[in-house]
Length: 347
Image (cartoon, rainbow, N blue to C red; front, side):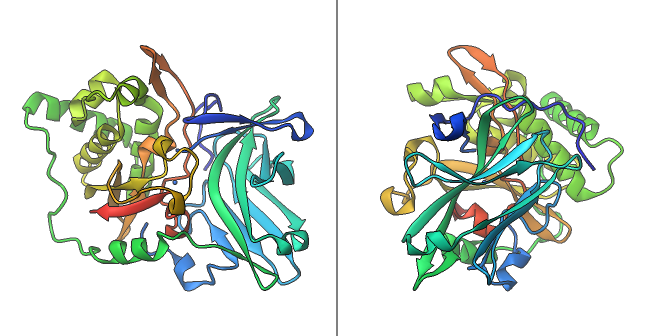
């Protein structure tokens, strides 16, 4: 079901990079599980952003004939999509196409010329109607050539994340449901909002999606505090009333809203390749310490990863609330995709 929310692709979360190729502009947005089915397939020939969430996803496949195929669905109102190679200067469009009225898209590229490249970095980007600006959402996708055969390179964090995620999958009765808001009036306000957000919804995964959408659409990242090194209010109620916080506030509010409607949820901390990484990959950053927080929610008998911070493009900057879009890159992602940008440390 296509979402009726009005979404505009405006300011990217971290940085904007011009692309001279064909006069387009690529603006990058760095915001991106449970035991997804992709783990049982061959992860070297398939890259799937999510194996469960099909309203908005990207899947790349390396076929036996050397073709690189893309298919997916975009639920944010974009008109066109592109697959770009970004390790070259200038960046190169490998595939471009129009998104169908139902949000689906597909295309293919003869990837045999890439077989001589040691590493190929790919982005999947989208442009809204009437715009030549492509906003990059699915990043850090990497192809590697092994004896002339292309495969999708797994993140260095992939195996560790799989192990960390598998270490705590049980759900004791009544666990992760306590609403950690001491003040009764504040707690009642959060519960009332959560009930309103999911009104009329019976499916738990859909409830999770609605709460994700509300937080990503209505809370703003406090860039002023982040850049000044100050301390932002991160309690659930303060984040709600101030309409802004840093990642801890996003995660705390998301957890409180989910628990308010009976969905077990917890906060996860780890390292993410955000602004501090400066476009560097895992091999070039110190990822020994936690620098980010996100959520896991238990629905449909499994833990689902949700990062409302990285799916929101709202910015509080220079004392101003700047409205952005939101997307679904980090809603129920595959561990393959999630590990490209996130390292699980504490659950």
